Image (cartoon, rainbow, N blue to C red; front, side, top):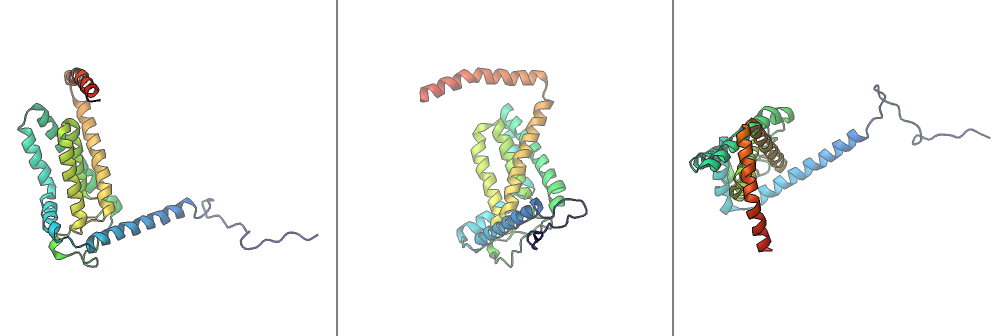
Length: 235
């Protein structure tokens, strides 16, 4: 009886120097990231190729107005004049912007270093153009700051959540529409903005005095019966 033979397909592949099999999860992750980049580029190209002359000027102005969070700071200034709770919401929103801006510009952009989109190659119409930033593309700092502000203010002042959320969404989309960010940059900026708002709110709660925390609990307890009764009547 002869010994069984092995083919090239059956032979064991040599292990790398660290003793771990080559490929595997790392190769799969690389393939997935490549697919995601392809989808990201396709979405960017689709937005660039879609004619929207009515929206172009509006979104260009919105994107420019959101530079350095000018819109959010203006809203915060108006809220600060509106009483104790709006003032607290304004401070929470500004704190969230600070966390989001530092996280996006000092950490995210320096770690990832993604190049900006090639706006000319995608043929983004000149009517949409805003100055192309020189910083890295990932994540979108405009989106991170706008979402952080909207989230923090919305938690403290719920009636403001929907309009500020819509504004933050428009700011994020404007960065894609004007050709300075990929959709993936904006999505990452939104996630970073929510996390930044949570961090800022947690820090504010930790810094609150015991009397302030007690007052907040009493306010919530007093409002609970009214909320419950109102919900029961509506149903």
